[in-house]
Image (cartoon, one colour):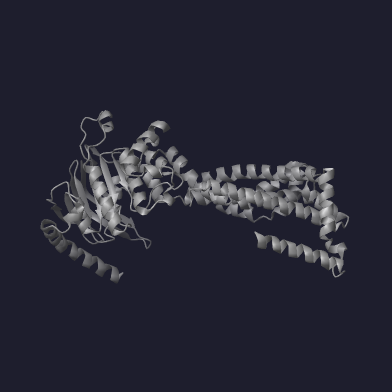
Length: 278
Length: 244
């Protein structure tokens, strides 16, 4: 579904040099897979996601989506940002319906779908509220509905829950998995695509290894920046559906955590050394 | 509210009594009772409405034309940074021109009627609207833009759903200032040459050392500004209701 081929990204620095954030990233993500990208802060994880989204162009290397090389915005993906990306001047219903309205659906039709999605994320009572009137967790739910309603094949998530408190965060993770594991709407089949994966392909960026293991099928570890590259890729052989409340204390989980932490630890230390030098 | 009224009562009462005690000369400062009487006369004989209507008409026209020009140019410049860079020094130069010196020119160009006053109001309103629109579009949150583009927005939809609303928040919050400026433009224009309007009334009164008339005109103007600004802040609160 997604393939990165030796993707490198450099930025011009104010003093005239170049700063390389990503170097030679090659990565394959299968259709319907949930892949988590972990790495120390400042290692270019968000840059990588922006490249897959088509918001940034790689300095060199290629991105393939499905059978096509990515040029311009990735029209098969939606993107859940770390920051709040809801339009503050639209109420919850209009925010959720936005993607459908942009695609030219009638207002009434879009609102009907939005209401269904609001019911699914438990926010029916808040349809006419503005984002500023909601809690952080509720805003994330609205963002999930906003992303899910247009039902693209790929979902990019950039530390979507990092601003939430631990308990809200765990609830959001559970809801994310529930949405992902549930069959996708019949609507997506009516679009008439030849092949439709049952599940969305998710690329999930986080700096929290626990979150990565709990959610993903595969955990990819990025090295400390600059010139970040992939240092490890590890499958997560935990059964689904997963009970996130129990999972974290299971032996298999702890084993995985130990293995991956051994790799990530080095990079975290390196990145801290790098930062204290700067 | 109570304290606000109290301040007004104390100021007016001490003004009146200082004049009554002959500590202040009514020739220079008039007295509140005379000013009130004058306003009452004007209200009854229709003078007030005749002039007030003209001033309000000029202010509103100035506001509308100034806003239309300022918003569209501000928007255009924000979307075309190269053009904005070229015109930047000229905009700053024009904005630095004291408007009072323009008034005689406008009188020459547009005559003694309302349009020379509208033009003066426009020069004041334009820059407030222009800078706010420009800033509002430039300041539109990067993440909101990226999100809406990822959700499938075309360039036109991006303008409609993100850039315009983002600029509107800036424009609405400057509405208060713009309206004040529009009235200043109208009144100053009338003051310098007109046949009607509150500014004209004040300047006529000044010409005959009629301080009561001057203060009466000023009072009417002040009351109108307060009423309008209450209305505008209500409107602003409603339009920006999503900002809890």
